[in-house]
Amino acid sequence: MQSLHPEFSRRGISIIVISFAEPTVLVKYQEYHKWPFVILADPQRRAYGTFALTRLSWRQVFSLATLKLYFRLLRQGKKHQHYGKADVRQGGGDFLIDCAGNVLFAHRSRDPADRPSTEMLLQEIDRAMVAKSGAA
Amino acid sequence: MSIIRIDELTLYDLSASAVALKNYFRDYALLIFLRHLA
Image (tube, rainbow over all chains, first blue to last red; front, side, top):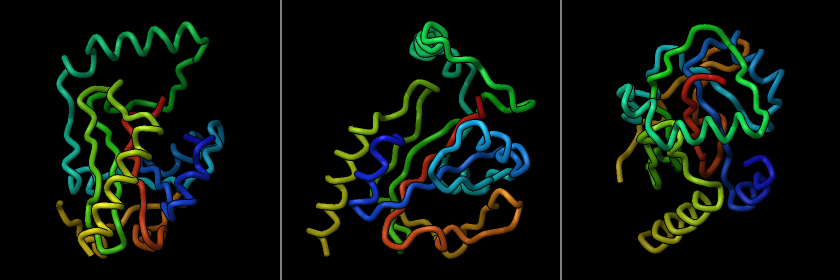
């Protein structure tokens, strides 16, 4: 995602990362990851609710795809960083919105491994923006 | 296509100050909602 950040900027898209962690925890997270994006906190999960991001079932949390992902990350030597007790069942997602609040693209993850690739996101975003300009 | 009341969507920045989401982008925003931090 970070390497393709210019592709989003070129399209006039700001990337905003949202977490339900407390801001104090996000500070530590950002000190480690140093993401070049805006990171905002939603500890009450109001935005999560607005975008219909619900809690996953345990079956979804430990899906075969998720276990494969975790195994691949372990093999790559990635270490799990602890940021305190967290709700591992909260689902995530990706949404493209315009300044009027129209949701042009939505992806609600079915399990932890279900995140669109950056390339796929750009394709879907291009498609949504063409559709929107055609409808205007 | 659903519509979000963007003017009512308020989150917190890393200093725990309440912020209006619409102030962080001009035309389009890709919102990436994280699961738990890891």
